[in-house]
Length: 347
Image 1 (tube, rainbow, N blue to C red):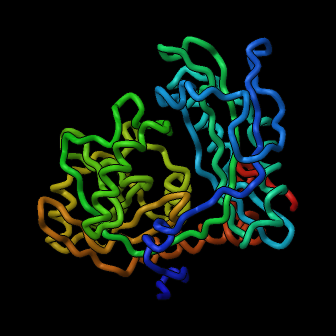
Image 2: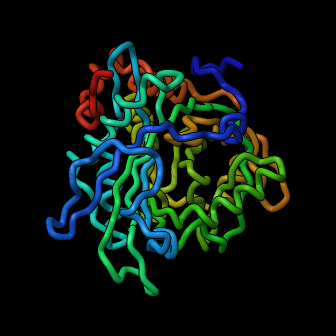
């Protein structure tokens, strides 16, 4: 189905449910306790080796953080989108778990190696990149020894940009513990993944999480925006993951002259606006799944249908997002700020 934004729309669960296999080459960097830094990355196979114990703190206690990134290829050029922003978020995630983070130079060099090393075996010009840092030694108690691995993997995965149906989870059942709500730790995704799988078994695509007061947080792996009361609103930072696509869309919407308000949004305000007709559009943003429009919201056993045509400003911002990602050689000259935050290379 062709949407007004010019993007091809399809069922997002077709992408989500498809099995993904990591491409064979992996960039790995090991932490040196003597140097108190990560070594230069080397290309390795996608498998554990003698540097990682079965009893690793990452396995036993969840000491692992990761990022989800995109590399776009046009002709022989590629762009790792907003790599600096992703690295800065990984620094914060590592700090939250008292783990070291590789320097930006080591981080981007590893990504460069896997993009260039895997591209010939990839099908398509859109790569999903996953850097991760995890604790590799382990004793009976957590963090008894300081040994860590940084690795980067990539695979081919298209962006869904589809219509989604959302199930609102009950207030008081948080997505994650408050201390980790704004960082990307592996443990955040255990509970959320289980609840989301249950929602998908009931016919929904994702879960919308609320805080203990009933304020909207985010969907599983997605930030959320509401076009209502003549403006665009999204939950404020603090207890949500600061999404890179979220940040980019806010910038692009404001360039269109839109007022984007970041504040607490109670679920009753959302449902009241849908019922009164003052909610024109809801959409989510995600590096992995792209920009998806919400067509149905289920809360307290009641289904709420939402209009399907985006405001012109939203459609224009989505089109501009495509220009600075999939068509980056054409789009970046008008967005020097994004270009400076990204890595450009040649395959």
